[in-house]
Image (cartoon, rainbow over all chains, first blue to last red; front, side, top):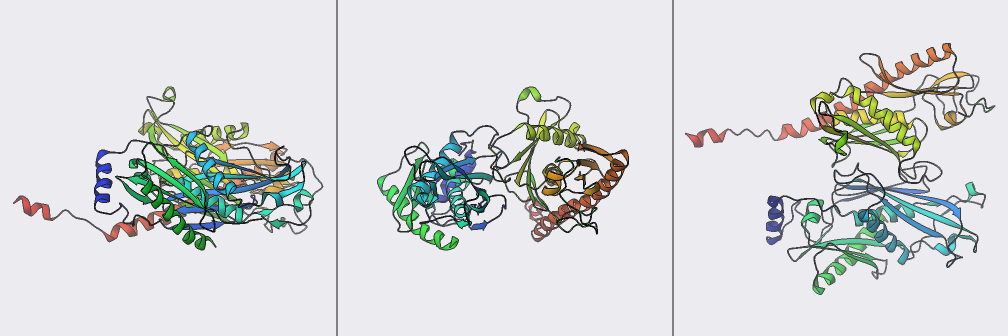
Length: 257
Length: 259
C-alpha cells in the first residue's frame, strides 16, 4: 500500500535472502502466513468476520437494508463494498475520505465477489424494479502488515457467508441465510528480484517490483485479477502466480469451510 | 433521553431487564497490547460494547501549526465503525464523534506528562466495533490502557462509566434500552488516586439528591474499573516478562577478546 521508505540495509537483506531461496520469516515462496477467521464477532451487523493473516488483521461487517434497485438490474439486489484504511492500523494511514489505495482495495475485493456471483443477487429481489436488498460490505483494516487484498477478500467472503437476511425486522417474513453460490478466494503474489512470493509481508511489499492478485472460484476458474505496483511481470511469472492462487485457493476454501 | 416513558425497565425487586441490580456494572473484559503495528493498544468489552484503542507516538505533530513548543498534544479520534449500530452509519466523522473526540482528548491531555515531549503529538484512535450505550466511557477506558501500554508516562490510569436515571431510580452503567428510554445520562471519567473529575456530561433530568447519589455510584464503579485496567496491564507485562527471561544475553565474551 503506502510506499513508505525502506532502509537500504533491509532491502539488501530481503534481496540477499531471496537469492538464497529464503524469506525473512522463514516461509517457502508459495506459503501463506497463518490464517485465523472468527465469524459473528459483531451482533449489530447481519454478518461479520475478523480475519488475521500473520500480523495483518481486518474486521468486516455486512449491513442490509431494503432499497431501490439500479435501473439496469431491476430484479437484482445491490452490492456495495467499501474499505477503510483507518489510522489505527498503521503509522502511514491517515484519517479522511478514502484515498486511491483504499478505493483500489475495495474495488478488487468487490470484483471477486461480484464476478464470481458469490451472492445470488436475484434471490435478493423483493419486488422487481421497486424493492431489493442493499448489501453494504464494510471493511476496516485494524493492523497492517502487508497483503491487504487477501485479508480483505477473506474477511468479506467469510462475513457474507455468515450473514442472515433480516427479513423479519423489515416485515418481510422469516429471516434466512444469505443466498451463496460459491466462495471466491484471492491470492496475491509479488515479484522481487524476479522471484514470485505469495502473501507478502509489509517489508516484502515495500521492496516488491510488481504485484498480482488472482481471485478464483470453487472450480479453480479465474474471476478477477489485478496487477499492481510500477514493475513488470513476465508471462511465466503471471502463470506461476495464477497456478499458485488456484492451488492455495483450494486449501484456503477448505480452511474456512 | 426518551423522557418519562411508561416502559418498565426495573421490576419490583429492583432487578433490571438484563438481570443486574441498580448499582451493578455490566461484565467487563479488558486486554492490553492487542495490535502489532501500534505503539500501544487495548481491547475493552463492557456488556455488549466492543471497543479497540490504539496509540501512536509521541511522534511528529501534524498539522505543524498545532505543535506546542512546550509540550506534546494529545489527539484522540473516536469513531464508530459503520456496522457497530443497528442502522448502518456512514463511515467518517459526524458532529457527535467530533465532540466526543474533543472531550476525550482534553481528558487524556491532563493525565499524560505532556511536558516530557515538546512539539510532538500523541495520537489515540478509538474504534467502536459494537455499540450498546456507554461507548464514550468504554472508549476512554480503552484509551487509558492503550496509553499505558505504549509506555507513555501518566499521572494515573483513567476509568470512565455512565450513571443514569431509569423509572425514577438512579442506575449504574446504562444499557441500550435504558439509554433510549431512560430519564438521565451522566458519563463520568476520573483520576481514582486524586478523585479529580476529567470528563463529565449530562443530559436529562436529575434532582440534586439524585445527582449526589449518581456521583457516589459512579465514583465507586470507576474504582472497580480501575482495578480491571491495572489487572489487564499486569497480565500484559507478565507475559512480556516471561518471554524476555528466556533469553538473557550478556555480552560477557567481548571482554576476553580485548585482552
